[in-house]
Length: 450
Image 1 (cartoon, one colour):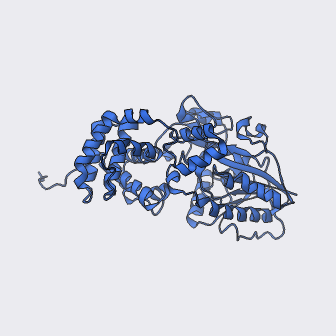
Image 2 (cartoon, one colour):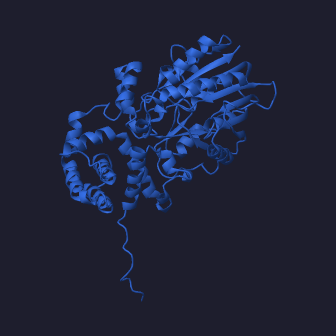
Image 3 (tube, one colour):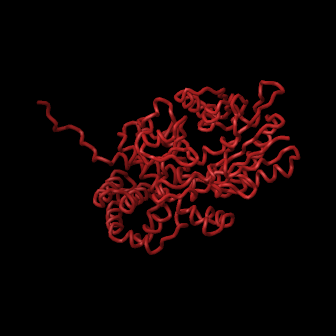
């Protein structure tokens, strides 16, 4: 029999997932790296490949919970720490956040949450001296944390003050608070199906929304769900699926999709029968778009190009329709991408609006007379939506708004503005179960070239 005397020790179950969660949190909070780049693609955390699906799901949920509740966690920990969170050892900060999030919001036994956080700091040279502190603080958190939350319960605590001030100024205090509450909930999985939403809602244990999206609370690897490998649906928030529908009947029409990747709207356009040219400046994102379309058995002309500089090679013809899903602050997607709240700054918006204006001008140049332009952003900020379109309409006499009616969006009057644009908010489409309610924040305007 082979001796196991010198066999390497087996790592405590769950510690690897928490170590990677700590690394990714550090990436967001201290290195300003997005969750997407740390979780997917060439720059993803190298430890992810070795994680089992269950541990990977735990890690993702843990990171997302902390980022959604970062303000509340900061409040609780500040009350439990005499001298504040240690600043000279990022791992100690991450361990406290990870432990407290599990104790307060996740189905993890308190003793396990404390033990694994202590092990996290013990394995880090700079943080090891804080092992006793982490142990004591998290034990207090298990006893007193919920009481501390109840004593300060505020919808605004987990939203950066600059964002809360913006939303309050534009939407009013009550709606701003409703938005803040909505983005605190883990969102459902939304799917755009090729056909028969009722059938897929049943198969995926979900429900068909009035807009045709299938919504489910199923978790786990997307690729393992029924219909994925057969290309019967793609992941797309219900709000993100609305702008393309504003084109109406586009069968046989030439449509340009600017800033197209990862391709959810491109797939909608192709599925509707359009002849689609999809453009994005990122080679990696275009590769992902092509991969997605391949799985769905949908064909489009996908090009790597800067949309502002690109020239259509069909001389003089122009497009029947142009979709501009413009790069933006993405504040409407915080419920799905909670890192956005802590990575964006107020000053980012001015630079983005300049790009949005250039894209709109390019879209008009590509559009034939009588054609339809759909401009949309996943931002809650009026400078990137309503104000951009107002400036365009005031400066371009050959452009008209084609107002959207509630009937075009399943009768949802709340998401149509008085001017006839589309404006969804995270607090729209409420549900008795908060995990099945809400929409991403989207703005869309339909314009015609006269």
